[in-house]
Image (tube, rainbow, N blue to C red; front, side):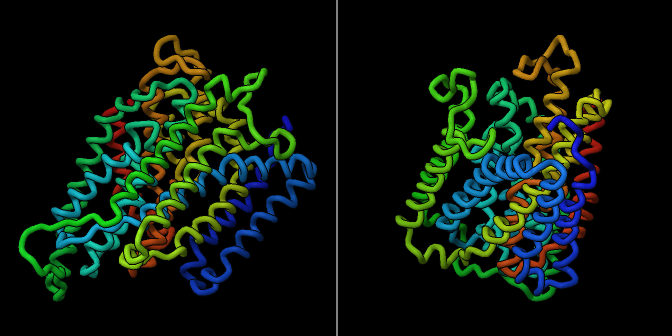
Length: 450
């Protein structure tokens, strides 16, 4: 299909996002019960008109392509990390004070580049909640958790965030992302100072209202139970790395240079590297449950609600956002975006509401067509370092702008909600990101991208 996809086919995607934003506020009980029905309705409102306009074969291929090659690996990775992290618990007398919370956020932010934003988020979200369980005013803690650990921290390696992994697969050197360290450090400094004073204000309010941490012993004692699950976390990280490395090996390519796999329908195939990744992740999750005492999951208040909600909502998002991605891919090279600051904001704002990996790839490809003679040589062309920096930062950083901007955002929100933390609504969270993040991104623009 070479013609430009009809823009009105984006309406179901907008409708689903509107439901996610509004219905929890006006019909919370109905929404919680009928999420799968709403997702099915909006998905069909895209699939049926698309089938009528472009034919059943094109429709089936489009849906299967996003479900098999995008959603499947996405949800399996999230499932594996959710299971393994649920079998690790941090116990001790560490109470959530402004100083402790700030240090915890900084450690988690740096950890995100080592085990991925999803891995770091799932590993640290429950300890953070547990440390602050005695506090009444704590939603802001999880908001900054999403800002820093679930998003910004993943910018230093291809392991950190999927867009950078896609760049690595297209010729960007593995350690090139360390160029982003000065930008990350500036953002960490600004946000951690802002968080510290905001948390101190709320901490003092909690103390005045009679809230006290449950610390029975003097000193600081921390115990990590289920620590052997870190090995399974490493298995999952290794699986993600393999998924980026194996497609480049001759053994996984056919005579035409395409990645080998199982044929599904039309040109849709589930690649062997993806199958290997899925198998390793599921094995890690299985072994984690088999080797861990159920008492640890009880201590973590582990339930399947959060992963179930994310699985249902995101399959609808992945399906209905296809027309928007098609339009972006078709129009990207003709948008007149040729300066680093333009790439930073265009990539970032679209990554806030679309999947940041295809958005990154669209603008990476666009940058490769701009005719740079100096910079990094990639499979999509030579790209200047400043331009690639802008694209990478936009895709990774601005996923924090909305709950759906990056995979772990909604998961952290769901786990927080399950544990009694009243997180802001969809639009309420956007107000937080607008107030806290947009000034930081403007500073990034002035310092690094003009």
